[in-house]
Image (cartoon, rainbow, N blue to C red):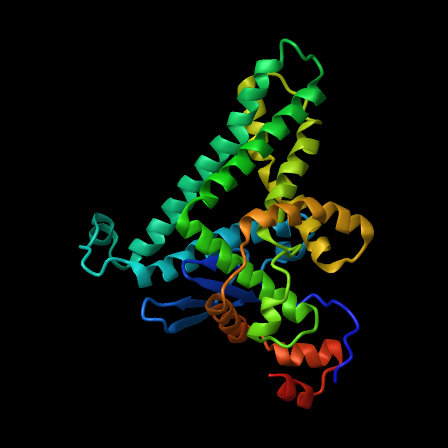
Length: 320
C-alpha cells in the first residue's frame, strides 16, 4: 500500500459547464458533457494563451492579467460547446449565422464577453462608487468611504450569487462545480480517482475562481484607499484602469494559496472557502463520473500518484 505523506498541487484546474465539466492541464483541455441520451461526450483540444510565446506570461503580477482573460475566453468557448447538446434541433438559423457564416460562433462569443464585462463593470465597480457618494456629506474620511464602497461591492456580489443559486440550471451547474473540485482534491490528497474516493473528498478548493473574485473585492478596497484624485469621472476611470493591477495581485494570492500550507495563507483563504459553500453543491455519482472522465482526458493521475505519493503500480490496480 502506498504511503500517503502530503498534499501535492496537481496544477490542473477547470470549471463547470452545462451538464458537464471542463478540465485544463497546461495547454491541453477537455470538456466532458452528459448528453440527453445519457452518454458522455468528450472533446479534447489545445488552448494557447493570447500572449503565447511572450515572456510576459511568466512575469509575476502581469501573468495574472493574461490568465484572467484566457479564462474568460476558454470559459465561453467550453460553455458554448456544452450548450450545443441541449439546443432546440428545430431552431432556425439566426441572423448572426447568416451574417457571419462559420465565424458566427467566435463573433457571438466576443460580443457576449464584451457585454458581460460592461455589465460587471457597471454592477460591481460603478454602482458601488455612486452608492458610497451618498455618505460623503456625513463622512469626511476618504478611507472610510472607500471601505464602505468595498462593502457595498461585496454585498452586491453576495446578493447576485444567492439570487442565481435559486435557479434550477444554476444549481446543477454548481453541482458540477462541486464535482470538479472533488476530483482535484481527491488526487491532490493522494487518493485513487474513483467515484467512491471523489464522493468522500471536499468540494472546496483554495484555487477556485470564486475565491479569486473575493480576493479581487478585497484587493480593490485596499488599492482604492490610495487613490487621491478629484472628480467623479476620473475616479471611475481609474477604478476601471486599475482592474488589470487588481487581477494581477489577486492571481498571485490565489496561486500562493493553492501551493502553501502556511497558517497565514490558510486564514486568508478561509473567506473564499466559505463563499464556495454557496457556489458549489454536492454532486451525484453521474456528475462525478463526468468529472472523472474530463480529468482523465488531460491528466495522468496514476503517474501523479506514483511520483508524488509513493504508490506502486500494483497499488493502483488493487484499488481501482
